[in-house]
Length: 334
Image (tube, rainbow, N blue to C red; front, side):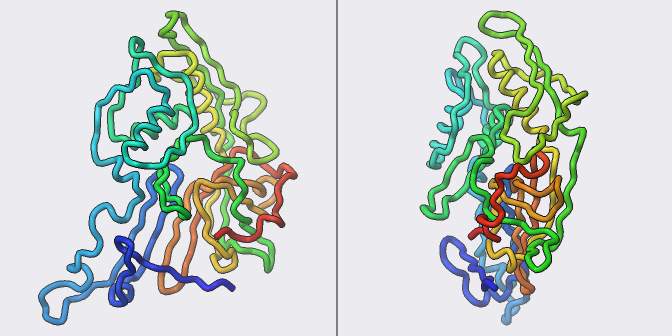
């Protein structure tokens, strides 16, 4: 049985014993779509001299210290034109302005200055997440635990990564999940139609996307082969057929994440820390729900009673492919 412990650091230094004793609960939320944050519940009292509050008046916990570095990208709204650049080029430049390591994958096309340049209206992180959504990408900021470098990510979900462990559901003594509830939104997946006037040749450019293009995480895709639900894109503001096609594909890909699951880990039995933005294997959840899932959110909670991990998963396919290596993946990830 692994020993569970944690350290609380402020500005890189451990807090003193008095502050640590006052801590009632720590929540750390790791999220694929939102900023990672920490919430701290601390018990306070009147100081012995009656002149103030314990802990609170020490001013230990300042502004902006309990969020990931993307909070720096949300402090100023801007109106800014980005001519002659792809969305990926824009992401690289914005991350570079904050000194973040570039983890950006290329996108197409680039808008020319004399066409309709991409215009930013909003904070940098809002803008990049908007660009990411229309390219079928994720956008987030993460600290590399090995180097300590802050990384700016702008790329499709990395579904090919090695799963970080196995969540074992209803497997007797091998079970490491205290609760697991899965849902399948059968009306979620869509086919997409769109039409626009191409800025280069002024010709109407119809676009049709019939199915998702992301790598399916299971044997059977979530979208139906017959009578799929169809949506019409409008008001996209996109001036080229290529970027409209990319956006339509992104909408279809996002809709294919029709499976979701929530649950809570037995942290001691799992033997590690579950991370968002990475795949994980699920075993023992039946033929439809066993297999590879993508971790969207993990809420880590530390109290005097122990350490719990509540997770939210998503998936774009049903069943197992036969390529899953449940035995080799182990029970947890460090």
